[in-house]
Amino acid sequence: MTNDQSPSGPTRWYLLLAILVLVADQISKWWAQISLPMGQARAVTDFLNWFLIYNPGAAFSFLSQAGGWQRWFFTIIGIVAAIVIIWLLQKNTQDRPFCIALSLILGGAVGNVLDRLLYGAVVDFIDVHYQGWHWPAFNIADSAISIGATLIVINEIRRAITQRS
Image 1 (tube, helix red, strand yellow):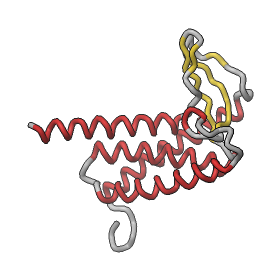
Image 2 (image 1 turned 120 degrees about the vertical axis):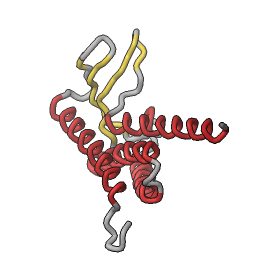
Image 3 (image 1 turned 60 degrees about the vertical axis):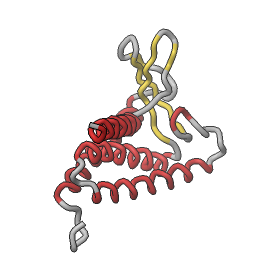
């Protein structure tokens, strides 16, 4: 940050990307909550349903039956992750692929933290399936986090290959 504590030029763009992810996530969850009946699949294609559920756990409903403490546990983890990501964005502004990936993760993490604070659980509504096998329901925030994490792995593999050459 500069002396006035405002984000620098590159950091500002990365934060804007995170905000765009957050807005898309929250609008899609708002739509799902007002449009979809709870727990009833609405077919979109042969492999995609809209299916509204509230997940009090983490990915793949991990700890969803834990009794309520997980709401605050995952909220705190999400807030700490957001703080660390913002710090990393400020320290690595020249590493564009890394910062884009972090921005996606940041937007997704904040989206899911907001859900936990507002509803006590994460709003999931995307159901991908094939021949009776269903991937756990997810949302745009989850997708952004997954894409961001994948981009970090790809970026680090690329960096390792370049350093060997």
